Length: 57
Length: 199
Image 1 (spheres, one colour):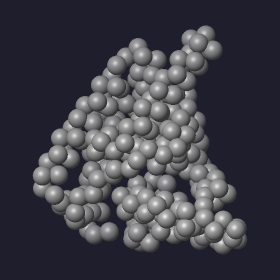
Image 2: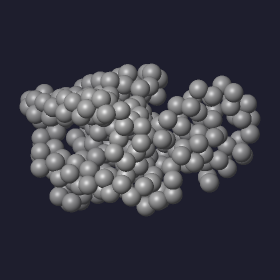
Image 3: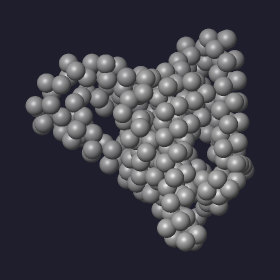
């Protein structure tokens, strides 16, 4: 998961702080898109994992 | 990098790290419950952080310049495919690991082994991006352009580079993207490209 974080943040050009906080505060379109994408995917992945593992994760 | 920039970076970094830890975002369960939509804390936290940053930037906009870094330059880029793909992969890591890069660095002081493991993966992933780009990017000058912009300093170590987010670099990247079509012919020169990435 660390790999995914590193790879994704480099690819998208920022992370939760860079895009999520700084970029969105500066109302940069790419940051808004990136933040929306990673939060949506994160929630979906977490919920899926939760279901698949029967609530252990 | 001037003394002012360096010292303000140290101070801001210290405060940021302290607040991240103090706010409890370093706790796996806080993030996990948030992403399970059981606890709105992380979303409220993001919202308030954005609000404060927005207000701060409004003040800076009025002033028109920063204290140490000259004219105020705010990022404003159009959406590209890499933002969606990168965001999706990031979201995957975010969802599984319930931590983000900034938090991981802060967590190395409190989270023990878990943060260290993620940190290794984080750096590995950042390096993997470089390898991936070397194979696909049509702009061999891509990193070269960024390098020239980043002045040699404490943070300009190769192994630290993934952690350094610099406005200049993003600007350079954007400029490179604009000239990407003219650089397309460089694709033929694989060796040149490999060289550009390895130096």
